[in-house]
Amino acid sequence: MTSSRRDFLRSAVLLSAAVPLAAAGCSTTDPEEEKAGGGTLEKAKSAGTITVGFANEPPYGYTDQSGKLTGEAPELARVIFKKLGINEVKGVQVDFGGLIGGLNAKRFDAIAAGMFITPERCASAAFANPEYVAKSAFMVKEGNPKGLNGAQDPAEKGAKVGVLTGAVEAGYAESTGVEKGDIKTYADQASAYEGLKAGRIDCIWLTRISLADLQSKHEGEGFEVTEPFTPVIDGKEQFGAGAFAFRKADADLLKAWNDELAKLKQANQLLPILKPFGFSQAEMPGPEDTAAKFCQA
Image: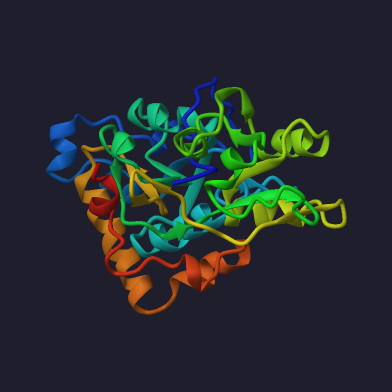
């Protein structure tokens, strides 16, 4: 799983009026009531609004220059929640590592951050089926002077690797033999880019999607993104699958979301929602790509 799917914890930052936190959008019912229905989903339908947590990480979920909450996950949220009779999506900005904690603390009712499904995260939250799958890539200097093209290359060529704090790529790098001292962690994409630009690292290891978005902000500055690749750790291919996450008690909300997501996939209407954010047909999940699959250890 990748990049932008991080796990570090900081204090939450609430958005301005463009994406306000509405306490009424968060569930306060007890778990048994939610399991039986009439919990978060019914409250959101009644209020006409639902609150989602995001990490301000393009292209997954972020605020644009006008202050609008957008990205692949928030835009998908608007489409699906509208189909469920919920016309307004409000956002709470939290550093990536605080998303699951904030969800379970009922600060918001869903995670709309393109979060990768992992067995560890599945122990704490109920993941929907994925809206995308993603491969890894490197951002390197133009010409790729160290020849970094696959997961094994950084270790074999003694490269210094930049990853996001708490990202799965840190584990990939360590598992493929990169020395701990050569793995540099950064709080966000912008600071990782500055590290690459200053020569403190030889590459940034993230998803192709994240790096393509990062490169689009720095065209002509002497860097490129490699072809995508799939790390193999302990003989297992590491595909990232991004999905919404809900509280485990919200079984009715999870089912309703999955049902509508399945309809979008079957009608080939998912890609048009995600395409403006750099996603392609190659990132569309197949029928076998389910939450259950990626929750398995």
